[in-house]
Length: 411
Image (tube, rainbow, N blue to C red; front, top):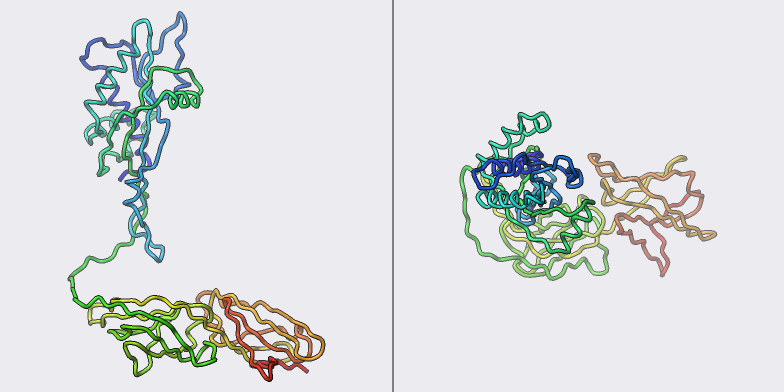
């Protein structure tokens, strides 16, 4: 892995390799040539009667993600948002090498030959080459920052390979660069891995491996039935029908709460009673089997059943009425981040309907078993009360095809 200077370090190492090629013992040296890292439009043009710019220019014209390298980095975070390991970004660098000189003396073509041979001899930026390049350029004022680059420590070495572009692609590239065409080659450097400077939270080393063999038997829930004609609410006993329900460490999860089954559980049927910790709303019901916890080992989940949706309805009643406040009792209690509202429908006199949003407790506060309405917002009369929590509504009671309770009577 490398720090944020890795891209600049690859460019500088490529420049270093080409500079060494200029001074080699190959035939036909081009005197006065050098290697630059300028934008192609900024390279001095050949001036008639003046000194002709000779050399090789290295320009990074495109960066693309390396998909193979990025796939190995997933996921970087655990379910609670903590870092499992440092995030990394894998990149491929695409370079344009241009060659300049006196066309009458074929300078550009002689430089191209030296560059191609140098990159064929050095297709991999080894650690020694990277260290020599960074040490050389770190002494220059403009590139002194390379002293902090750690490309040489990257586990996977950067590899160079020629990239062939069609005439159409070359035309588009030079048009985007905004300058006239020069003799050029394209190379791809892969892979450069950037690593974030973050601290990951790691688990303690495993001291001892404990293996247990158990039959791979997954419980299955076919249906969940409440008492005949009854809505599911706090205190309701549910019957769960299915297969393979009995197992070690048997519990029933409803939403965020796990409940112990009633006595008399069977492999095809068991019962569970909802208590006030099960919040109102739509939840998935699952049967879970766990290994027993030991003195030094936690319980582990052996099997989970499929999830069956269950609608837990809230109930509401009048608690107290004062001159300023109407207090309503709600079950199950209203929990943090739940969306709730109270609707009042007039049972006597002219039909009317009032709706009041409720403020749920903030995270960290206990659940609210009562909610308050401003007495001044509710006119005198008899009102039918309905409570809605996370889309689940309380059901009013019928009396001869008329909803009558729970009711709020205000003189």
